[in-house]
Image (cartoon, rainbow, N blue to C red; front, top):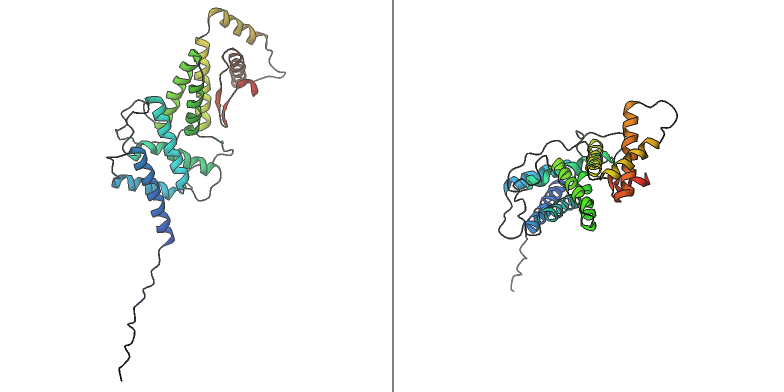
Amino acid sequence: MVAQTQPQMRLRVQTTVDPDEAAWRDYVLTVENCFLEIRGRGVQWAETDRTRASAWYALGLPAGATVRVLQARVEAWRFRHGQNARLPMNLAWYEPAVLEHAKHLRQLGSAELDPLLETPTEAPSMTVTLLVAELSGLLAATQHQILQHVYGKTFDWLDAALQGARPDEDPQAQVEPGTPPDFAALVEKCRARMTKLLVSALDDHAQAELQQFLATEQSPGGALSAKARKLRQERLTERWLAGHFGHHVPTQSGWRDPRDA
């Protein structure tokens, strides 16, 4: 009688993966793949890039949002410097926009984001990164030479304010990101700069028309503070200039025609 051979018993090891670790790995891999695709051949994923991406993950910023921010910064860079311009070789250059978007999501009430990011009473629906992306479309669409100049100057200024550095700085240089800019204050400064540039482009006849328009516009009843009078005059000037140039101005919800406000 042939003895039956007992089937060999295999020890089955139960392996479990920490969900948090798996989510971290997925996030870092997504950012890595996006970055390498942007940079193309010959670029390696450095340990410093992994560390930076891990820090972004700790903020609670979703991978999809991070990828969109990286792509938006690349589009802005290529729009301003040309399709063949060298792109930044490390994630440090992209970080200001990523941090700004994380702050924006915190403002919208995401409890998962770092509580150290301040939450204002009313959250804007835009970011500087998105304003720059929209402005590239306005700049590409206009044939008006004065608007091309003003939009171009505004593009560079907003981009520099976001990066905390000159927009034409060497993209390979290490950038130490600072605190994301105060969005509401930046929007107001941007509008004032655009108004100043457009007024300076008016000829003598148009300058006189603008002054006459402002003189005939009576202030509403009641005493206004000096700040309120100044803001009202700025808004009236914007409206008149929009009738002359047809430009848009930045707001906390995107680029708008001042006459619609």
